[in-house]
Length: 558
Ligand SMILES: Cc1cc2nc3c(=O)[nH]c(=O)nc-3n(C[C@H](O)[C@H](O)[C@H](O)COP(=O)(O)OP(=O)(O)OC[C@H]3O[C@@H](n4cnc5c(N)ncnc54)[C@H](O)[C@@H]3O)c2cc1C
Image (cartoon, rainbow, N blue to C red; front, side):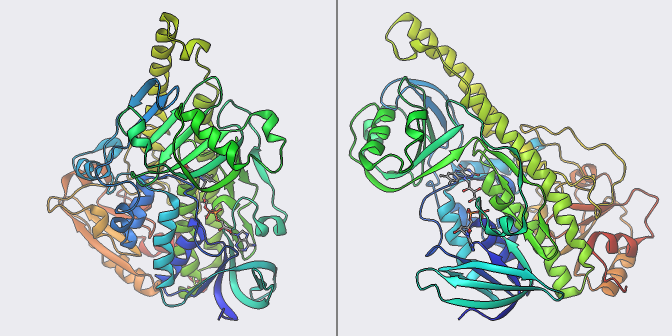
């Protein structure tokens, strides 16, 4: 039975809503999640879990579960470009298998100083893990088969109605807060009258217009394709551009083709025979295949909601920003939205923190959404507007030269789109009201390069410790006071202030010299989402209570 009353009502059981349920449930906050679908996504959807998302899964204790899903541990994650899969390979960027990436990350620094490398896994599998963990938490009620149908805010909270898919049965529910993680057509966003701003309809030869997604099973593909296995298979030929991602390394694929303008007019979309023909055009041969699912979707959007909520209602994930999937940031940005608001809602609900803390959600996440959609749009332009020579498929000297030119361009493009530590690890919250800016300049913002820095407002820099642990594994689940260097200051003032404010603060003393160099301070306050909130610069070591109150949202009466 759906409870009549809860702390947070979450509309939407995609990655954003499920992740928020976990962040809240882990902190003892009650939440009800409703979603009209019968269960988690059937179609693969997103294919890439970025390093930062994997670090959050590690923080919550299930990164290894996620890494065991998707492509097998020894399957290469190459990005490869073809005229057709059984014809010419134009270019390939070799990338390590998941098992190899996990080994390598332990020896990497600089841009790739991370606790977790990215993982190539379909969103459908990630959602199953998130659902299992959310459901297991006391206080969390996940109800697929129900939709949010109406809501209104009053003085004490939200009065909502949820309805059952099929029967239409209605149920009232009261909540202190409502979170709309209800996807691109968000009912919550529309009900609040909030629009999207940005670019809603870029036209490109690929990734700019109506796309058709085909989830298929074709185990013979690996025998028919004369080229080594890859994770991403892109095509360039005179008929149609397409992209196919390996889902399980054993014969399941997520195939996306761009519809021609005359096909877009057909509301019903391609029929099954036309869908099979699209796959065979890309393969360049007949191939036995079984279609598991199909859907049309629109590429070419880089949209961000004008506001991320109103009053006690917040928006996150696709409800707040819509990506073209180049760069693979839509789902990953959705996860970080949930992480950001999760600890803040818990602080207000459980600890009585000042509700003004919640305003920092939009202040922090909206600029990141604008940044991330912008990078994704750049990648879409780079690959979607690229037109190789018409000679590409010909058996001639001109054809050979055209293929060499296309290969060189596409390999350079792939390195830009698929090696994005700056994009995934380098998002910053400069200007946030709860970040204690220390006036030092932020590092340059580039998708391909991440500069670890202890400057408040960014992800805490990561190091591997001498005992083999990740520095992140030493952090507390809530707040961490990191003591660094040969003579770190006493934590007593912070410990006392945390006790007074009811803040759960772990004190971690780290003797690692590399960490001291990276953080450039001997005392650093790290938030529950592993973002640096403050670092001591030698002048303000005696202001612990003020630092904590600002960063964590003190009780208004404190
Ligand atoms: C074909 C396809 C391919 C994609 N490929 C990629 C990719 O390669 N990389 C990438 O990063 N992203 C990709 N995306 C985008 C990615 O899937 C989304 O960014 C991601 O799902 C966003 O998660 P979310 O939780 O915000 O929203 P969603 O996953 O859309 O979940 C929203 C949920 O809200 C539910 N809902 C709707 N209305 C209501 C209501 N009234 N009440 C309650 N619930 C409601 C819906 O049923 C849905 O389950 C792709 C998307 C599609 C469609």
